[in-house]
Image (cartoon, rainbow, N blue to C red; front, top):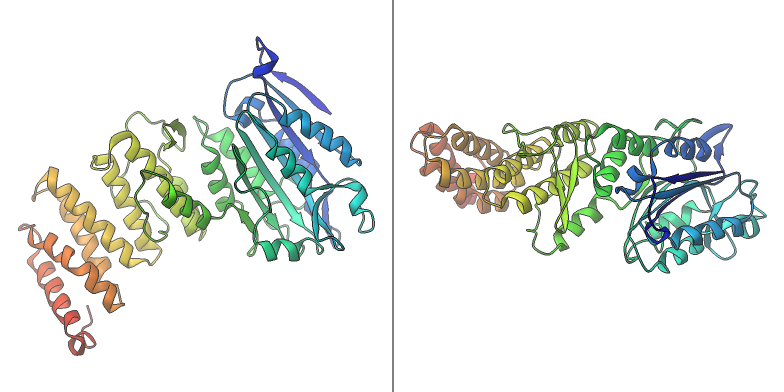
Length: 427
């Protein structure tokens, strides 16, 4: 079935395209692990412009119940040929040709013996995307790998071919054959897809694709072992490699920080706007908390860094807004048990605030107290020694601080410098 174009354009060459593909359902012991038709039907209710992230006229095509891979290929080529933005969604069962070790998206009626003839080869999808020459493209997958495909997915640790495609952003999840339908699937809309839809409908301003992926993966209740593409670690590495951005610290964890980081001009709630070369995120503290409470510390870390990068680009690294974001990252690190990063972040925030707020500011004292607490929780002697001097220097620069704080820090730092004493020191 096909849905008509959205909006009225003055030229076909600028039209975008949305292609939603429902492959074969994944069923285990009578239970439905993924119902691709239901997923596609739900996603088709979202306006094409919202899925694409822009207001250009667009066509939406939904494919369900298709048995011929060449039919899918034809539709895929039409979509890839669109001059405007492209959004491709694929849901269903991922299978494999055991003889050739090739991945396929199973279509309706695919059996173990007919994989090579009734399924869409994964390399066809990647190859068509690689041939695209104009316009941005987004690919989202919500798949369950069967027993033939799961060993290959585990061996590769990713979905082959998607990374590095020029102009293509790829996101998604692949669950294993033994995954219970506890993420909300069970014949209904699966958790990851449902979260994409919910976030798009809830945010006053459309979140970025990266933000949608992080929130969806963190809130979907995915079973352990689910392949998430890209993973939180991969997104962290992208942030490290991005030009003009500082190297982020170790992954933080849950809970909003004590100093709210509201960005002037942002829309309340979780929103995003495209900035020059990055994403300027609104105020995702509620989402950070939700992710962390669910134990999704990696996703919370990525979202916090994306947020901070946008704030820095908009307001500058020494701005009050950027420092508040650092403080939230510090408290996230504390809640995750990463006391080394927490101590360093709190100390840095204290020094930054000291420069433009003065020694009598309560926020400066709060940052110093937070840094001291976290530092006293660091058990590794080398790490504590490395972070200690800067903290002690900050405490010495604050005459209004409780003098017991400085004495405690100085005693511990002295003991750490003398190994035989540090073993008996209990902060």
